[in-house]
Length: 141
Image (cartoon, rainbow, N blue to C red; front, side, top):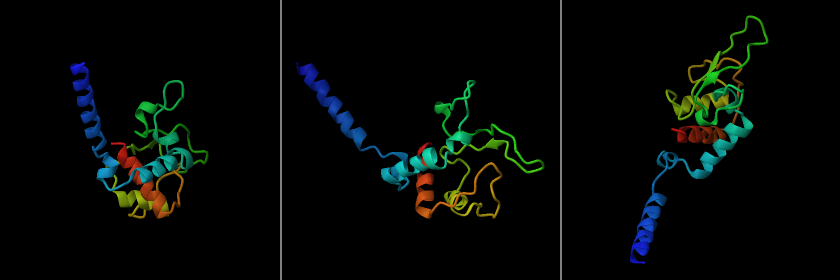
C-alpha cells in the first residue's frame, strides 16, 4: 500500500511539473489560442497542407511529415508560365523570417518584392491571422 501511495505521489509530482513546461509557442510569446487559430487557417482555410505535405504512394497526405515540403503534384495549365515544382518545408519555418512570411500572407509578396511562384495563391490575410499562421508553423519545430 505504501509503495502504491508513493508511486501515486511521484506520478502527481511529475504531472504537475509537466503542466508547467512551456511549449515552443508559449516560449516565443504566442498563446495557445493564437496557435489554434493558425492551425485552423493552415488546415481549413488556406489548405497549405495540400501542397506543402508529401503524399504516400496511394496519394494520401503523409500526416507523419506534415508541412515538410513536397513536389507540386500538377503541372502548369498555362504554357510558358513559371511554375513552382516543389512547395517548401514550412513546419517550423526553417530559413524564413517571421516578417517575410507575414508579408507573403498579407501582401502576396516577400519583403524583397518577389512574389511566390504559382500555384501558390496570393493571400491577403489580415495581420492578426498572418501572425497566427506564423505562430502555428513555428510551433511545429
